[in-house]
Length: 417
Image 1: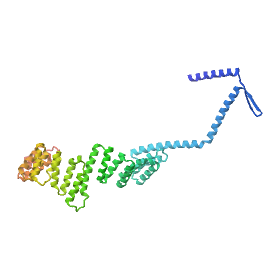
Image 2: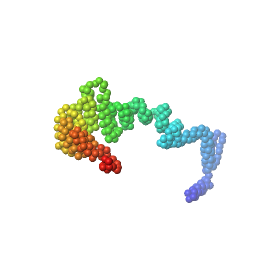
Image 3: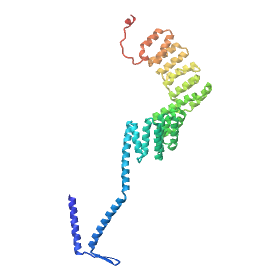
Image 4: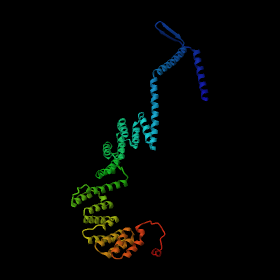
């Protein structure tokens, strides 16, 4: 209200000043054209010019609006189509996250035709079609995504690979991922998918070749990377023998297995799980003396309770030397229950029954286990001490079967009656 009042005052002041000018000096304007002349005052001429300008502007607006109705209609229709597409896309994505695949595919597919970014709609609709088991529909939607946005080949390819992997189409998925790897060699997700496909195809050699890139790109967490590396080389060891013809002799198998073992990275050659697998494979080809030597060297380099237990299960070329080697470890590991168990077994191989019994009893006293209990009980029975063996098992049932519930038992005299 205050601004309007000030504006009126300004208009009145301006009008008063202009009126004084008009009275003081009306001015003179003469316009001549051929034989025609027009005479008027300056102020009348100004008023006519202003009115003429406003009239021309008004007529021009009328003509412009009359000539452009189609363009305005088209613009309105485009805005409306854009808004409808946005609403359908949003609704489709919400339905997709809720698992309503049928409605999600319909909404996203309809919105894609009007969307400014159809790639998003087609990829999401392809996933919805895949979840319904509509393979043909999913493939057609991926083709549309590729045709509408050619520069998004990597994104479309990853979606295609994911769908192929979920279908179990491993060979086509591998082909897709190898093509993507050429297009985007540093894409960590492509590398992870490639590693997954190789694993399902049991192509562990390809995985070992892929390991350097996986490490460099940090595509996997450190623990997952270590597990993958260990698993890959363990399977390579097994496959080194599995891929040989059935008629291959043990000497050739031994040579092939050694070559596979030599390919292991140095840190993995001392991994207990890998060493155990290597030893098991050596035993499977009747190379137990070699297994004993390898295992002894491994334990001397790096102590492992797991490997010590395995050492007592194999038979080397020289049984006395094998027992002597194990006894030398007692100096640095006198309280190892696994070592005492192994010494008991090696004593049995050397037919030292009393010494074996002592080692088994020491192992069980140090750390009771069902394995040691079974060895001790078996030896006692063969020594003729069946009652003692039975009493030992009876008193240590908790070791054989842990977490037995507390239940009432009959009195011994009542049971006999």
